[in-house]
Amino acid sequence: MNAGVFASFDLEAWFQVENLRPAFPPESWDALDLRLAEPIERVLEILAKHQAKATFFVLGCIAEREPDLVSRIAAAGHEIACHGYAHQLPSRLGPRLFREDLCRARDILEGIVGKGIAGFRAPSFNYPPWIPEILVKEGFLYSSSLFPTVAHDRYTPVPPDVKGKWLFQWECGLHEILVSSLPVAGRHLPWGGGGYFRILPSGLFRAGVQKILREGRPFVFYLHPWEIDPDQPRVRTISRTARFRHYLGLSHTARHLDKLLARFGGRPLRSLISG
Ligand SMILES: [Zn+2]
Image (tube, rainbow, N blue to C red; front, side, top):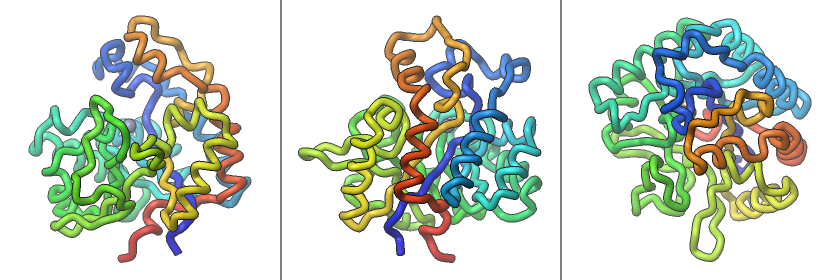
């Protein structure tokens, strides 16, 4: 039975998102506070309260700094999956460096959880067509790196032949689980999490989820720990658009997540595919 809510969290620090990249080059990361313990604790509490399970796509560089946090998430019964090592856009890395970044992260995560990692999500949904084959060769079973929605400067558009699908298999055998969007008047609204989830009234958002589920599709959802950290440092040097995208609605997110999981529960993405 595939209808239901499939929750995922991209485990990265508040300063590692693409919007803030100009203000925080990777050389500065080691000296910065990750601010992950509290938001993750909150997420784990909410998941436990509703007996929900989720997938955590973890950055290798975070797992290296906070192995106990990753162990704690895994011990609570959630799926640990891979978000690459340093949150670099694959289209900028190219196939060879991407593979190095991927394997480095996978090896760190497997070392912590003591078993194979099945899932991958590309940083910023940036997903060039050469990635699926590399993932299969490196032992991954699925990816959740496509977000069919209105244009976004970094997201890779969904191939035309898979429009309207929520799950498909690439020729190389990799399963692709698409993040949910809501078809409204011929357009796909980005309903899978992020800004819409933070900004819209939670009842309206849940009505959209209900519509997706009624159509027999699963609701595939994503969120970041920084989205439930309203006290994170504000960065003034980034563009107005970036600031708008990043800081809107942060104080509502945990409450919205609580209501979403109370209504629909949650399962890890891995359970959408067999094998
Ligand atoms: Zn990310």
